[in-house]
Length: 175
Image 1 (tube, rainbow, N blue to C red):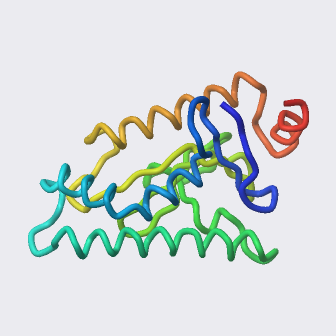
Image 2: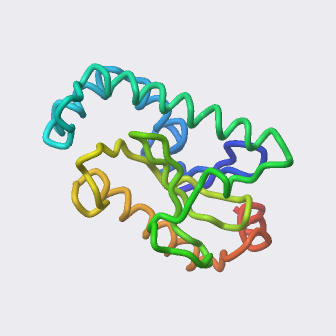
């Protein structure tokens, strides 16, 4: 696995071995692919609330992807905003900042998962479509897989002595 810069030496993403794209680019492509979205929604129709239809949710997912991209661009292009304004602790009941905290950035149906290196430095590990009737990451195989990726990357960072901006950028310069 390789860590690549996405925006302004503040937001990074993993580029997993045997993958064509880094996780950020892979997610943006996937969430703009109507065939993928429709197939996903058909497979997960049980998680769609009554009164909602696949077509409307598919359109919302594509809009959410653009909103995430716009938000991240805006944050990384200005000095008065930090990525911590977008990424929040993965677990809603987590109130204290931890070293290498697991984080999520979200729009209605989409989640980008990342590890917080420091106040304004994050590494994207993956992302998922999360439907309203799907509550916990362990509830579905695709989000369980993303949770495992988060844990694996956190372990990788720990094994390489990464715990803050200095150790992170030192690691990047050496690799």
